[in-house]
Length: 210
Image (cartoon, rainbow, N blue to C red; front, side):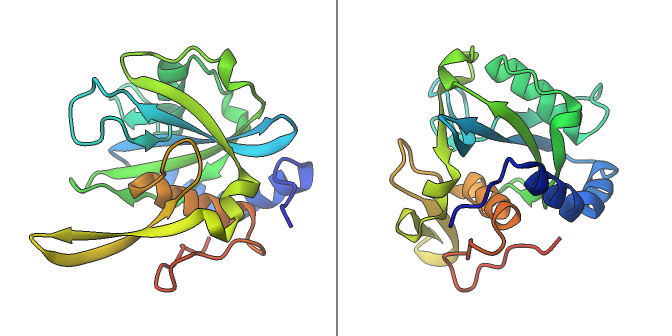
C-alpha cells in the first residue's frame, strides 16, 4: 500500500518525526546541501531528480542527483543552501515554509557533509522547469510507488584495488539508475515517508532512526 505522503496528516507526521533532527542539523555547519523535493505528478506522489551535466568537471558528471551544492558563506544555513541551489539549477522557487525537515546528513568520499532537506513542492510538471544547462542535462521524477517496489530496488558492490569495500543501495528501472549518495538519501526519504511500508533492500543497511 502506497501512503498518502502529501496529505495534511502525512506532512504533520513527517514534520514531527524530523523536528529534533532538523533543529540539530540546521544549527550544525555543513559543506553542502540538497533538496529532496516531494511533488505530485499526475496525481501521484513522486521525488524530483536531476541528471548532472556531462560537461561538468569531476567524477560525478552525468550522475543522477538531487538539486543542491556547496554551502556559500552568505547562506544562513543548509536549508537556505538547498533552496538557493534548487532555484539556480532548476528555476524552481520553494518557499521556506514548505520545508518539512532535514534528514540525516551523508558524507561523500572527500568527507564533505551533505545535508538532505525534505520539502513539499506540490503539483509539478517537470517540463515547466527551466534547468540551468551548464549544470543539469535532464530533470525527471519517479513515483514513490515505483521506489517502494522491491523489484526496483537493488544494490551495488564497491571495490578498490581489487578488494571489496562496501555495498550501497541502488534503484532501478527508471529513466536512469539511482546510486551512490543519491540512493542513500532516497533510502532515508522512503523510511520517513513510508515507515510501515518501506524496508531497506540490504539486510545490513540500517537507515537512521529519527
